[in-house]
Image (cartoon, rainbow, N blue to C red):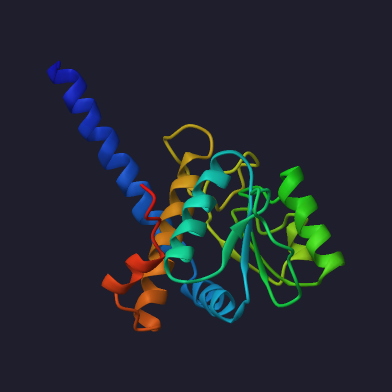
Length: 192
């Protein structure tokens, strides 16, 4: 390995970690507390997103299942019906992605469940549909004035932050519910 590559790697690691630190510090803790409340009072929690956002949401969905929460993502083969007692978490940085927006509209009109938007753009069409928003104020395709800029391609910072917020929220739910970490293994897949 060249010395130049090693230096660039260290510099890029520092830049990405700095961006993540600034982003996580900029998220309103009150919105996260409200999200935790909604997750805990819901019968089931559903997630919807597309692309890399969906991959992050699927990881969060799996982690909540590890806490004994009935969690699903829209489109999974075993997805049950959503009801008014459930929560839909919509992940979309722009708030304008066609599929998540359409699913949120359908959930609102069909069952009127609780809907939370996790995204960057506070003025998207999602604003009219959701009960509230958890804003991760990072660079979107709209380049809003107050967004945290990123040296990473496209919306990598949003997707990374979404995953970390989900894991941090899971940790806080574990602490809040006084769950035994060792006991959580009962919910982990065992056909591996």
